[in-house]
Amino acid sequence: MKTVSLKIDDSIFGETENILSRIKIPRNRYINEALAYYNKFQRRQILEKRLKSDSDLVKNDSIKILKDFERIDYVD
Image (cartoon, rainbow, N blue to C red; front, top):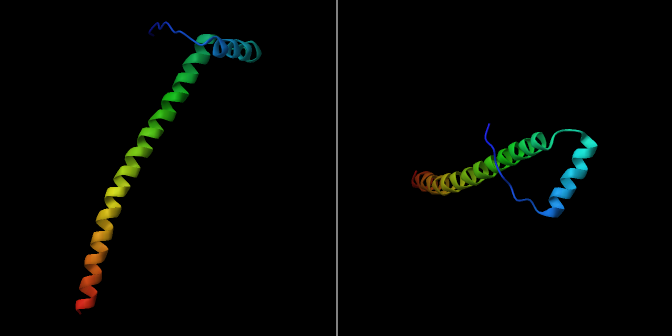
């Protein structure tokens, strides 16, 4: 396990301490869970952007191919 030093805004720290006193889990566990959740969120954002980009590339190719097929159909 790695040790990390953080500077946290006073308002965020206060809110966190308030929540921790109610849910009764250690601050370290809470921060680890929050980071794991945020990492998962960011991975999904990255994947979404990559899929959108790939989808746009395929869409352009698909439109070109459809137009080629339409020309072939009209030739017959």
